[in-house]
Each structure stands twice: as C-alpha cells, then as structure tokens.
Length: 156
Image (cartoon, rainbow, N blue to C red; front, side, top):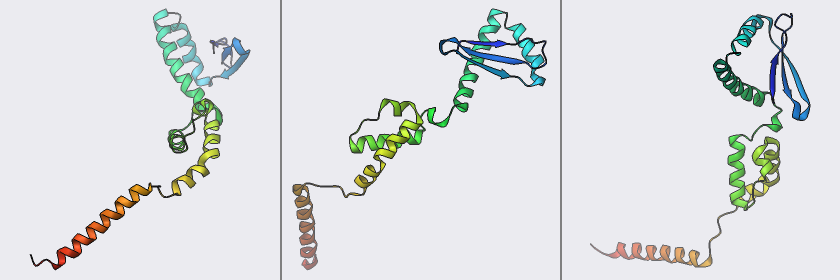
C-alpha cells in the first residue's frame, strides 16, 4: 500500500484513504468524530520530518497487525499447531509441505486433510523390527529366564 492521506480536516466526516496504485485499490476509512481533532493536530505535526518518520514507523507496525487481523481466515499464516502437525506428517510419510501451505492457512488445512488419515494409520501400526533384532531380544529373554531359574536352585 503506498499512501495514507487525510481528507479535509474541516469536513464533518473525516476519512483516511489507503491507496495502492499498483493494483488500483483505494479504501476509504472513516475516523470516529471524537478522534478527528486529534488526527488533524497529528497531521500538522507530521510536517516535521523527524516526527513524521517516528509516526510512520508506528503506524506501519500497527497497520500491519490490523490488516492481518482483518484478513479472511484462509489468507492468514498457518497456525503453530498446523505447522507442527504438518511437520510430523511430512517426516513420517516422507512428503514435502508445499510452499503455498507454508504461507496460507487454507492450503495448510488442505495438506493436513490430504495426509492426516494416512498419518494416523501409520502411527497405529506397531513399529516393525527386523528378524535379527527380534531374535536377539528373544535370546536375551531366554538367557535371563535361564539365569533366574538356575539362580533359584543355588543355596547362596
């Protein structure tokens, strides 16, 4: 967005205009009547370059937060919970998370919806062990059982 301007401070209904000429977008934002006078005084002060820079930085930070809050849910960034779950799915199923899913909540929801059933069924499967590992465990258990039973007959 490239411009934020104040309509005439002498008019009854004060409006700010948010303008982005790159996409031919203009939004007219009305200010509550009780703020009009304060905004007009602030506008006078921003004529001083030092005050303007400070004001602009503050305004940019606040405006960015407000825009994010006002955006439709699907255009917001994925939630930390979505990102965490998608990361688990990605590692377990060896699939990459699409770039769009990393940027937008809707696409992340689609990714999770696509793979969640497959992920859950993989998680329900018992871990597979090789036959060699199984034989080693069985041998250890058998040895332990033998030593326990032979130890019972020992008088010491």
